[in-house]
Amino acid sequence: MPRAKKHYKIFNASCYGLKPLKDESIDALATDPPYGISFQNNYWDKDLPDPRIWRDCYRVLKPGAFGVVFSSIRLMHRLMVSLEDAGFLIKDVLMWAFLNGMPKSRNVALDIDKELGVESEVVGRYTYTQGYKKGGAENYYADEGKLKREPASELGKKYKGAGLGVKPAYEPIILIQKPLAPKLNVAENIIEYGTGALNFEATRIPYGAGDEKVGHNPHPKGRVTSNILRTDALGDGYDKFFLVPKVRQHKDDFNEHPTLKPVELMRQLVGLISFDAQTILDPFMGSGSTGIAAMQLGRQFFGYELEEAYYDVAQKRINAAWQDHEQLKLFDSAARNGAA
Ligand SMILES: C[S@@+](CC[C@H](N)C(=O)[O-])C[C@H]1O[C@@H](n2cnc3c(N)ncnc32)[C@H](O)[C@@H]1O
Image (cartoon, rainbow, N blue to C red; front, side, top):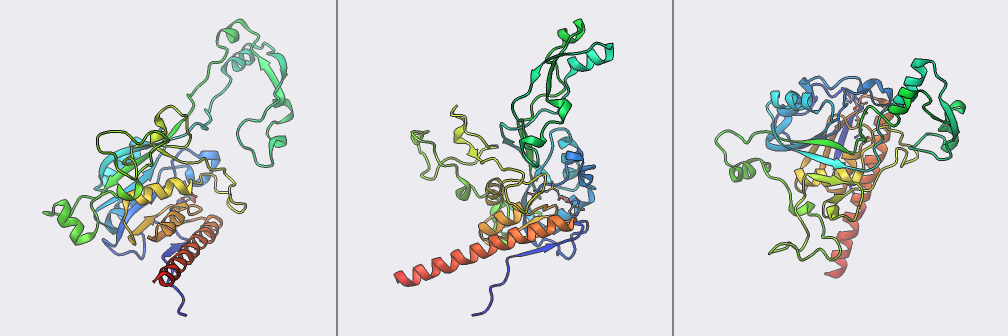
C-alpha cells in the first residue's frame, strides 16, 4: 500500500521571509508570536516580532484570507499597528478568558516597612501552594519565603493589601483579514480563491443543558462562535460561549514549552478561519498546538520554529496527530465499505 503523503511541512528555521512559501498560496494564518514581555525571562519573548514578518504573511496569504494572532494586553496596540501597516484589516479582537491568571505584583505594604527600616510582623507560615512550580509544592517556597508577614509601620498598615496590577483574566487574539482581491465581491473571491468567509457551521457552540430554546429559530448545532472564548464554566449564563479546558504547562511529559496553547482552543480558532483541506500557516509554532489542531481538522499545515528543542516537540506532536487522523480516515472508509 502506498504511504500517505504528510499533510504538514515544518521548518526548524527563522520564519522571516517565509521561504519557500509561494505568493498567495496559504488559506489562513493562526499564530502565537512572542509577546515582547520577556515572559518567564525567555529571550525569544524580549521583543515583539519584526513587523516584516507580517508583510511576509501578507505576501503568502490568499486575498480574503483570515488570520488569528495572539497578543498581550500591554502590547496589543503595537502589534495591531504592525498588522495594519502590513495591509491587513483588523476585524475584531477575540478574548480568551480564563480564571487562573496570576497578578504580577508586589507586597507594597511590606516594601514600605523595609524602606522605613521597620521589621514586618511574622504572623505564621503559608500552608498552601499557589500556582504551578516545577518539582512540585516542596519547591515552591524558598525557606525564608514560607513565613507569612504583615506590615508593622503605620504607613505600611494603611497600604496593606495594595498591589501593582489586576489579575489577568484574558488574552487578546487579533482577528485579521487580507482584503479581497481588487474588484471581487465576497462570493467572487470565494469562487476564485476559496477564502473570504468565516466557517461558522463547523464551530458552533452547543447549547448548555436547558438552554436550547433561545431565540426564534435556534440552530440545531448551537450558537455562532462569539468573540469571548472561555476556559472555565461559571454557571452564570456565560457557558454559552466556547469553553476551553485549562492546559497545564507540562501536560505532555516531553513538552516544556512555557506558553503552550490548548489544542482545543486552537481547534476552535483554526476551524473558524478555514474550511476543509485548506492550508494553515503558523510562523511561530513553538511546540506545535496550531499544527495539531490543523491535523485534527484535516487541514494542511506549514510551521516555523527557531528553537530546535521546541521544533522537536512540535514534530513529535504534529506527526502523532496526523497519524491519528489518517487512522480515523482508514477506519471511516473501512466502515463505509463494510456498510455498503
Ligand atoms: C509564544 S511561543 C508559541 C507557543 C505555541 N503556541 C505552543 O502552543 O507551543 C512563540 C515561539 O516563537 C518562536 N520564535 C521566536 N522567534 C522566531 C522566529 N524568528 N522564527 C521562528 N520561530 C520563532 C519561539 O522560540 C517560541 O517558541
